Length: 308
Image (cartoon, rainbow, N blue to C red; front, side, top):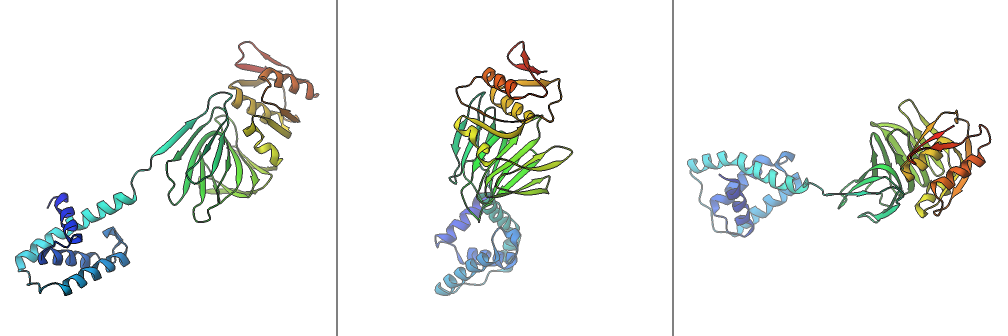
């Protein structure tokens, strides 16, 4: 029997047009499939359908017994009916989800609202993917730098995938950085998140905590909550921040690279950049703030800068 014919048989029963033989065929299938999840229906739903059929049979004229030949045909059709029913119901449950992709360019910050009302700010040079409609888990993907203000929903965790890093939240505000060549960073402004890498829990972060992840280690530190999202308004306010991280922020936003020829591991600074500042303005400020070692920025093409 072709799949289309099986669907027609199901439709005929729903419309009350099944012959007695067809009704018994459905009954035989339910008896065989009852309790099996492979049937494509939960056991309680199978029982409900069976009871409905029985009620209809009791209200209908007496059904004459099927001959052994017809029962043989019915038995032969059972696997096909089971397969078709499973295929139809399971395909409906696992229909592919359409994903949306948002990209930001150099020196561009973009805000988007997700299907659940969560808000996301994407920093420059970032790629973000999210489903057109959320299912049981609210899962999104990011490559770059984003700030999330997640809508509360205790029944549906919010998951951010950034390469091998996975951040799970129920409702909070946090930032995540996933840029090639840099450590992954997760910083929490409010609430709490759980961070895993390849299914291994790296830590649970609370407000004003940041986790920096490299191939060799995962390090927890404190961070000023206000600085976590300052860039979403076009500003960049950093408090007691390693110079290397400041340079990474400038790389991501302005689309440049820095080559460091001096040891800046111990250099930290607090600085605030406004939206009207050019990259050169920012570099001039850094040169004046950092006293030891005294550093200067040199460039020949405005794309690659040498720190020396």
